[in-house]
Structures are given as C-alpha cells and as structure tokens.
Length: 349
Image (cartoon, rainbow, N blue to C red; front, side, top):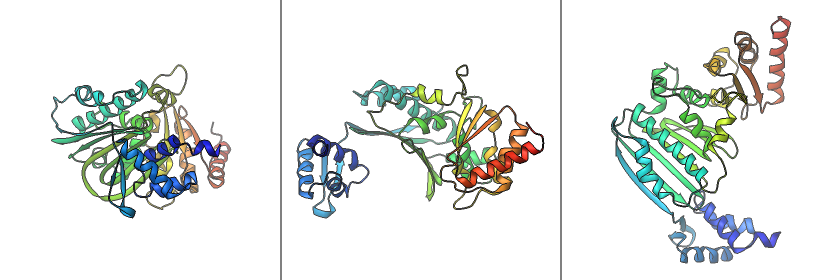
C-alpha cells in the first residue's frame, strides 16, 4: 500500500490538487504526505513544469507554484435590465468548459445563471465582472458586482437589526427581496451544490464547505458590492436533482418544503444562545416549511428560554411544522428534553 501511495502519478496529482490551497508550503506538505525527501518532491515539480502543467515563480524558499488552467478569463459586464444570464453562460462560460462531465456542467450553469440574475435584478449595480478559472481539480466561478451589497439590501428591505441576520435568513431559503420574480431558492441551493460557496459583501464573509458541511461567518474589511465565489471539482459525481430531492419533505412532495438550518449562524461572535429574542430570529419564516432540520454543529450550549421558545412554544403554535435536531451536545439534548417535558406537562400535543 505504501508503494502505491508513492507512485509518481499519485504524487503529482497531490501536488496539483494542493497548490491552490498552499502554493508556498506544498513541497513540504507533499514530502510529509508521501514520506519522501524535499529533493524528491522537487523532481516531480520540475517534471510538471516541463510538461506545462504548473508554473514556478521566485527562487528557493520564496518559490511559488501555480497550476496552469485549462481556461481562465475575466469578462466585464454592463448591467442593464436587458442583459440575459443564459446568453452570457452560453456564449462565454459553457464553451470554456470543454470535457467537463454533464452533471458538473449542470451545477455550474445553475449557480452561474442564478448569481448573475441576482446581480441584474437586485444589486442596483451598473457594472460587474465574471471570472472563470478551470483547472484539473477545480472549476471556480466568480460573480463580482459594484452594487449596494446583498447583506445590506436584505437588512434594509426586511428591516433586520443587523446584516448578519441576512445571512441566517439566506441559509434558511425562500428569501427574496423581489417575490414577484424570484422564489428565494438560488443562493440556498447554490450554497449546497458546490464544493465551496462564499459571499463577501460589506464587512461580512459567509461561506459553506460541502465536504465537512461547515458554515463560516467572519468579519472582513469593508468591501463594495458583492463577490460570490463558487468552486467545484470537475470530477464530482454530485447531481443537482439529488440536492433538490434532499430538501423535499416526502416522495409525493417535489417542492422546496424542507430546510436545513445551521444554528451557529444565529450566534454573533462568541455570544451564547440564551434569549427568546435570539430564538425568535432563528424561528423567523419557519412556518413556510413543512420540515426543518436544526443543525447545532458548532454550538455547544443553549439557554432555557431559547430552548423553550424553539421546542415548546413554536411547535405548539405551528403543529404542521416538524422540527428535528442534529449534532446536539449533551447539554443541548437536556435542554430540548426539558422543553418537551414542560410541553407535555401542559397537556400540549
């Protein structure tokens, strides 16, 4: 098994796949992974460079590596109501993705057209840029506009107390500032069909990584407009329909009736989830779904008032909505059971 791991093609594949994430430290990382010398790794690096698969910049310890993409370009766009996202896709993005599997093409088309349509309809921007980077292990699509900023606009339209609340609402799904023309599903599904999906807007950065099902919310320096980045491995076997089906609540229900909510997004910074107000913000618009999975990954404790609001009061007032909890700590399970006990002692169903 050890000999198989040291095959030249395995080492080179590891190098190419890791360069994007660690361009300065990939040589040391590869040497440790395959238990070979730094000189041995550098021989593979030289071969890849001679084959034109990577580019090398700098000297010795300051050396950086870059995978040579199959396709790479930036397309500036003038945003008008007449701009059609499917034509931009058909004329510029799709022709550059030669050799990509149909299921991945479908994912890229969905994500790109949904995000560009959002810019056209919601951003209030005059200009935008579309970027494609297609490499052996990664397709990255970026849509960058100079508009009002997605989180700020959602905060303004829905009169939310903080732009962070906009991120929580987007993660729930069925949120749109233009219900006549949009269902509010684009960002919800795009954030789950790509390997990595992120939005940088205003002073906030929001990201979801599919592999670990990790959600990230960070403060950033103030930026203008909105930058959406979507990354997928061109070898992925994921299919859009499988993701859509995951959020239908039953065999006879083909609509978007089930949602998966990362509870960690309801928390600002290192604060604890203890109050009824926090719970009510989490529960906002839950009545639009039949089934809700509350994912407590990244949350270790909740307060009694928070648990009571979520697991006793809300179910009593919305008997048609089914709540499920996953990734709960022992403390959270105890709080949920306490809320259930109080609910049953009051004679509630």
